[in-house]
Length: 163
Image (cartoon, rainbow, N blue to C red; front, side):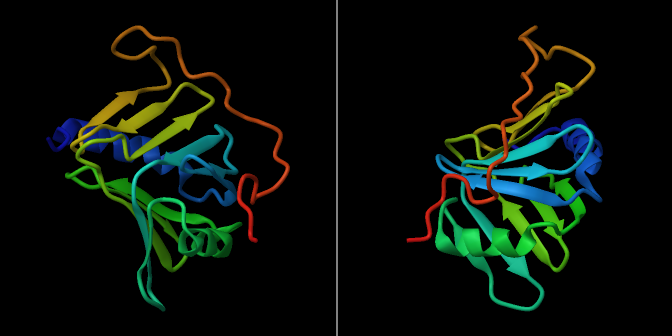
């Protein structure tokens, strides 16, 4: 089920917080986690498929862990986010310079989520709908806000081996 127009509008306003931020680090493990260098410490977790669409080259795909995805993320390190948006079908697009990171919704799984240490949690639920907990409230079920997920950053390639 596609997200409601109001949810897409709210998600896009909340995603605007990362525009201008740089991709600080990424980790690959049970998915891909992207960390941004903004004041609210935003983190994007991708557990579904992803693709990079570059203006100057072929499209690259990942599921989400692949050498192609790692290569594109390495090239995007320290690159500012030019745009971040969710379309009416629940697909997330984050633009780094001349490359778009595209994460489509998944019919059966949560494809992506964005969180901040200020309490934001946005989740692409199965089928493309959005669940959003805004920073200024505790969410629709009264659940505790997500904690500060910051960890010591040892490497942009933590959890990924090249050999």
